[in-house]
Length: 201
Image 1: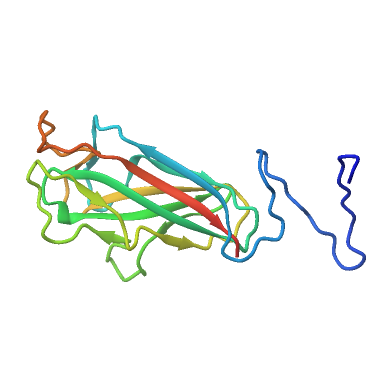
Image 2: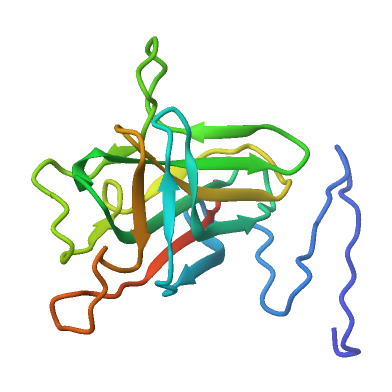
C-alpha cells in the first residue's frame, strides 16, 4: 500500500495457510510455476594438496570439500544435483566408482545409487574403461549429463556428499591433480564442485 506496508489475511474458508520467508534478501516466490529454480547452493574447491585413501573396496569415502547443504521450502519440491570430482587414481582409474549420499537433518541418511542386488555394489557410475593411470592425465568424474533430480520430500536441511569407492583395495584418489604433480604442462590441476538447486514441484 502507499503507507509501505502489506497486509496478509487468512483464507475465507478452508485450512489456514503458512508462508515461510527465507532469512535472506531477495524476491519471495509464494506461488512458483512448476520447474522454477527457487534457490541454488554450491561448494567448490581447487585444493590439490592431498589424496583420499580408498583402503577398502567395501567402504565409501567422502570426497574432500564435496559436500553442500540446502533447505527446501516445500516437500513437493525437488533438488537438482550436479557435480564433478576431478582427480586421478594411483592405479587403474576405471575401477573408481562414485555415488551421492543424502543426509536429512533429523532423518535418514541414504546412498543414492543403483537397485539392491545381493552383494553387488550400488553405484551411480564408474570411470569408463580405457582410462588407465599414467601419472599425467587427471580424470574428471561426472555422472550422466552431470545432473540428478532428487525427490527428498522434506523441508528439513539436506546435506549431499560425493563419495568414492574402488573395485580393488588399497588405491588412492588424488583430487584436483594427477598422481605425479611435476611443474610441467603435462600435469594438470583441476576444480571440483557440487551444485544443488531447488526446483518447484
